[in-house]
Amino acid sequence: KMKTLSALLLLSTLLGAHTAPSRHPSCYKRALKDHNCHGIHEGTENLRQIDGSLKDHFWEGKGCETVCYCNFKELLCCPK
Image 1 (cartoon, helix red, strand yellow):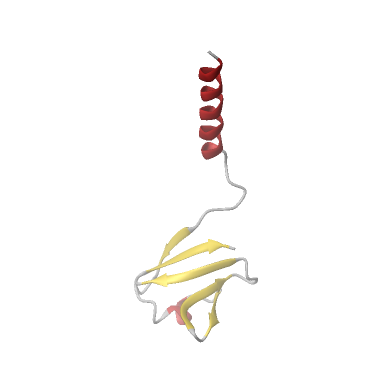
Image 2 (cartoon, helix red, strand yellow):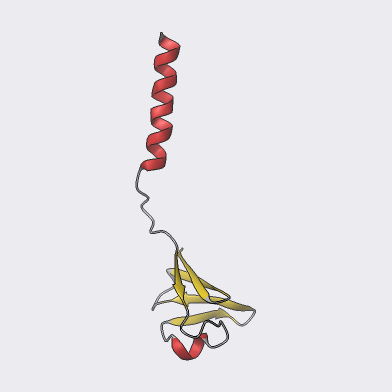
C-alpha cells in the first residue's frame, strides 16, 4: 500500500510540473511581408542585425531581450 501511495504522489508531482505555467514567455513566429529574409531591413524598423557574421539573426525591440532568426519566409523570435 505504501509503494502505491508513493508512486501516485510521484506521478502527480511529475504531471503537475509539466502543466505549471512558465515564467518565461514562449517563442513565437512572425510572417514576413515580402516572404523573404533578404529585404528584412527595409520592412521592419524594430529589428537590428546582431552581427555581420550572423546574417539572419536579429535583436527585436529597443533592448536585447528578444532574439529572432529569419527562416525562409518567417521570423522565429524567442526571449533570452
